[in-house]
Image (cartoon, rainbow, N blue to C red):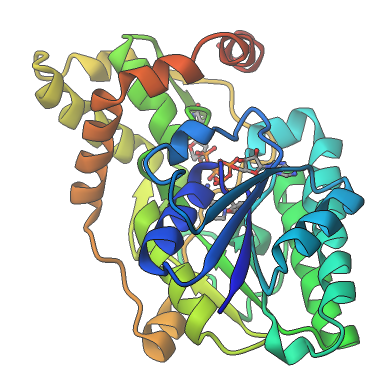
Length: 351
Ligand code: NAD
Ligand code: TYD
């Protein structure tokens, strides 16, 4: 019997992890702790929120007593920690928000787990979800492995790197059982339209300019979010204590090539003329400190745990576009109000 606390379960990746665990493991109690910031949306979990093994607790990671009472109320046995401020552009504007949630929030959570589990750390797992961005930027060649030195370049990646270090330090110092995974860029249903793929899907639907940063030759490795959730399930159950696993899609794309593929697929699905959406492409001022290339070597998780992505990029992207086209209500709710303000503040001075 496990009572698993999943933090950030109302966000993009967290909602997929919550859904997977609630449906696959009816014997586990799944407790979703989320502050419901701009990125948290309970609509992401509408289909499973009546399940008898699912519980939601609205709480902020900065509120240590609130975390403690959630641990007590649900007798939490394990943690999968996804809650974070997650967008690089926002971290450039407001770095302290990232320090508070990603660093102090993680340490608060570690402290509560350390106190509550002190009788026998070996019976409890603290699983921390991190990003490949902690490794910094690659040149034209090479891949990030689990032993690549940390070299974060943005306030976001610096805050995630710091939280990873705290998790390792708690394993070393207090002998807590921990595991960390560092994943490449995710995409899929419920992705908040501040990140490249959902933002461009939304702009293509509404025929708004597609703001390509810099020369558009930046490279990312893209992974379908459901494959990330499956990797998290595997690592949670089979991963070795105190290890790191890199998760990636073996799927590198230069931004401009990905954007052209997206335009092509969307023209087909929307019944628009060939080449119509590409005309929306607009090169804009670059992101400061923009990492040139990320690429993950996912050999360890493949060899040791047998994980590999289950869908190709073309399949995953096509399913993602279909999802956004079928869930216009979800998109409308998100893109009204505060989102419009965000969009103006982020993009009006880039052109
Ligand atoms: P997201 O921004 O979509 O969701 C974050 C969630 O955390 C939201 O539901 C939000 O309400 C919640 N949250 C934020 N601050 C909180 C606080 N102080 N207290 C409690 N809850 C709070 O993020 P995501 O894209 O789903 O990313 C989830 C995790 O995966 C993050 O840790 C991120 O660093 C990591 N990650 C993301 C990607 C990616 O491509 N999105 C890739 C690798 C790793
Ligand atoms: P993003 O989705 O923000 O993820 P990350 O920066 O964490 O990798 O951005 C992915 C890539 O797309 C990155 O190179 C920045 C670029 N980008 C644009 O060109 N325009 C945009 O409007 C956004 C949001 C991103």
